[in-house]
Length: 204
Image (cartoon, rainbow, N blue to C red; front, side, top):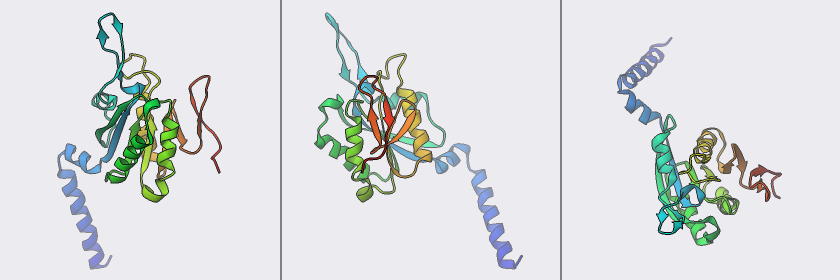
């Protein structure tokens, strides 16, 4: 090797040695991917406080915060922000615009939106139609739950986990992650009888 090449190689080795000497937690922070979680309410966030004379439900604080405190994916840092606390049938285009704005404004390239299942596809389409223009480098996954996170048999943890897998493997785009599958925003439907989400051919 030429002298300059040997020096360059030695510099790289010294840099690697310096990195290895750093505390393990710091190395993990340096290697970690930042994920923004935007909460909008929906079944995943529902709570059922006991009231006089019976039970009622309310949209509580984001379930994603509790899930990620219990199960933290390796090499990911996360921040959870609440956009609104609504049943998805009550969401308006103004709420969807707020989700879009948060996606545009954040420096994070990987985003999860927790959402009620009834209008999740509509919101994913709202953001998806604007992805090429405003969000071309970002991966955005919409997810939720068929049963509240506070229930023992909830699917919330599973669905959120699918999102983290999609964020690390799918190309930039907008996706709906439900029932163990990842669907493109413009190629997903929901079965009216079972409530399950399924992929379909992309719309023209």
